[in-house]
Image (cartoon, rainbow, N blue to C red; front, side):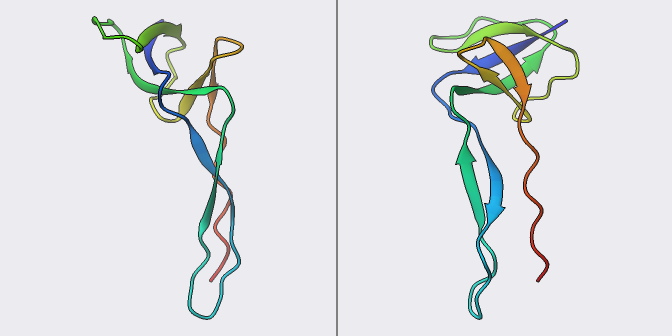
Length: 89
């Protein structure tokens, strides 16, 4: 089992959609912030001392920093949703 370094001061967001393209501007990503999501900043086998508010939690071996987040309400680590597909040009 690995350890995940949690940064509760950093929010987590993902691309949930795209704006419509115009003649002068290509589609732009729409970012949605995940409620109660704290950033998984690093994953290690052996934790080291960190300053508050950072803290370590146990996590599965397949957890990857910035691809997973820590839900501060349920105290679980969850995968960040996949980005919405970019529209064709």
